[in-house]
Length: 188
Image 1: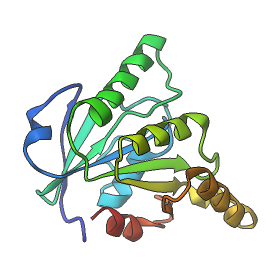
Image 2: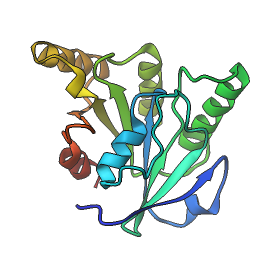
Image 3: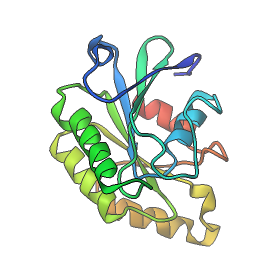
């Protein structure tokens, strides 16, 4: 599948009829600053579609993008570290939890993004466990693989694979355009 059109529709902070209109939803989740927006931009071929920032916690609502006029990419806020108050972090956590586990909205796939250089953190593994318990269709991306030394590459990917279990791990780099076609095939 090729992405021909991609358009930002809106940011949501709770129930919205857009989630109920029957179009399939593919949600992107990961730690703050793991590169969710860069992955979405590289996947759609539009540099500024999802706002990127070096400031952790920039995404503070559920951003909805209409793709090929037929399905949605859902950019969820990052979990974990974000430069905001404890209450703000708690609200983002509640928003993520509501959308993924309480809303009743069905996602065709959850693209779970892990920083390949850092590896899965305890928060990543906790989120993965919640997604598994909810029986979500999980696609794991090891993002920023271009930052890993060639001598470490295989060892890092094996470690990630060991920690995430039987899930397929897609090596990905927005910058070097690695993994885009594999991800498209996997989620569509």
